[in-house]
Length: 220
Image (cartoon, rainbow, N blue to C red; front, side, top):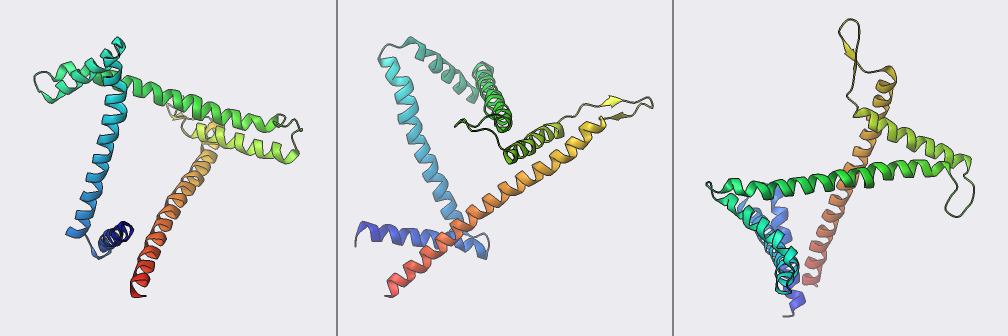
């Protein structure tokens, strides 16, 4: 029995166990789920040990890099969170993690998403990269993208003006743009959901075809 045949048999059994969830939650499906989580955790642990701890911490320390002492100290302080008595010392590491994470997320959102979206919308009104002038249809498409971008941003604008009667309402133009932005956001979320559903259906078809082909190969 070859290794390929063994792995085909293992894949067939595991696929059948996953499909057993169609009959309801059962120990066989729980076994496969636990196996998947365990293998994933083991894989990520090995990756972290060899590509992060050894490559970015131990190796620089052995080479005399004093700056590597900073993540070592922060990691040690983070481990103190396991102790109820010394857990306050780990707040320094948590503050660094949250601060750096927030800065990276904000910078990525502004530079990668907001500025990128604005640049993409503006590029429709200028000359194309090859030097050819912008066509009328490209300008119309640019106006459509620009309105969609502004409307989506207006949907998340929650500022309001206080009226004489004490009522707070947004300006009419902001409300109109927010309503249009709701449509654009709904279309975007629908497209994302359709993509996820298509990916799931593709995986289901591929696994079903694998089961059928394996059974046919055994019968023949």
